[in-house]
Image 1 (cartoon, rainbow, N blue to C red):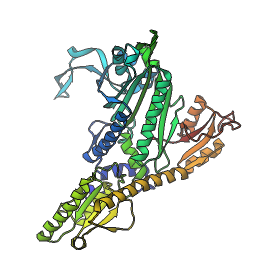
Image 2 (image 1 turned 180 degrees about the vertical axis):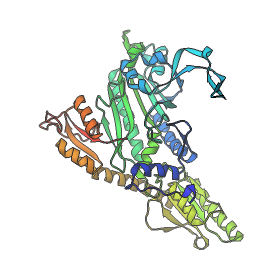
Image 3 (image 1 turned 60 degrees about the vertical axis):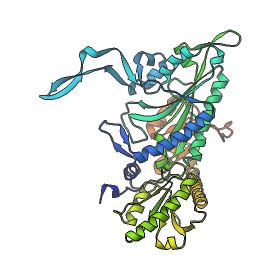
Image 4 (image 1 turned 135 degrees about the horizontal axis):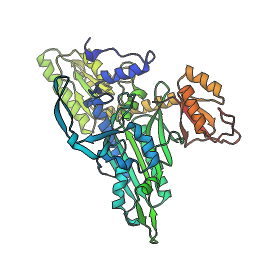
Length: 498
């Protein structure tokens, strides 16, 4: 068995191993020589590019512009906002020298930091960019006419994680981070909620993943924020994945970096801030929400290749004729914007080609043989299952568009039905503990906001408060906390998470 034909562990046998097997079989990543980092292979990077392109369009439609800020941040910057430095100190990688010199290590040639190149101030590889950005905003903002500033950055960040998993949590990862400055609190809160909505719409419309919009508890809040809003997605094992966050930072960073403006009345005030971001963990979310024991399953709107055409021939004369026919179908599809590829390889049998494209998650396969050519049609197979069916070449583009739209909707509907099926209501902690061990899922419970009890539950069950849902919050009056028996303050979702 070749490495491309390696078996995939079933989800029921070992969900974590299944996830890694799907990544490998779909050729999405490879392990890096640097522990905790990964190489994103072309097929995996193409998925991220599709996400990036769609999100970038949405950001620009809401008035945001892109900029870029340095990877290296003076260490002193992180100490300016107390909660921020406390939240990230243990994850920071630090640069102390700017040059190496040759040396011998155990009798062999090597290199070491040159003592003469020690930096006057160590530099931190950005774990997030609030500090460097707010240092710049101090120079860019003087009066109310300079506001709002609506900037987004596409970048890499480094957080020295102890336990990593490809795409979901790595030492270095790719992301976008929006950082905005506003004249009033209301404007900043409006921006925070607006961008959460952008993320939720993207997740459902493009990733085919339904999400719950919510607010984090103080324990789960971003370091330095007054409020953290999130979108939570359910994976196929019932665990939660935080798929995106939007933070209302208040005036914390403005005060730390002395960023003020003169309002219309001539009064000097600190600005109000937000930050928001999603990362390559969205690639992991798509895989864990949709893929199966055969391999990768991609929603058509994200798939780098939406349709693959596989001609099946015998002999050179038949090959040329079938390829011309397949290219004609390809051109029809490309003309309406469908991402399509013709598999012209002659060193693989048709079954091996089908197997490979299934593992890569291509939503629709079109088979073309001599009989199909005679009938002026193609034979179609959907990655998510169902009987094969013919499509006439006349009108093929319109029909393929319909099929791709049907697949996209079916994937969203299936994920939503699964989330509803695996969301449980609990009114007692004993019931919650018993159910959590026997059935993965989300647990909607009456909860009294209590950081200490939250820590106890996490230690005892490995479950955390994912959020207080923003929508569909039922009347809480008269309900008591499922853990303490005190009057409940919120309905909360508890779950184990990635």
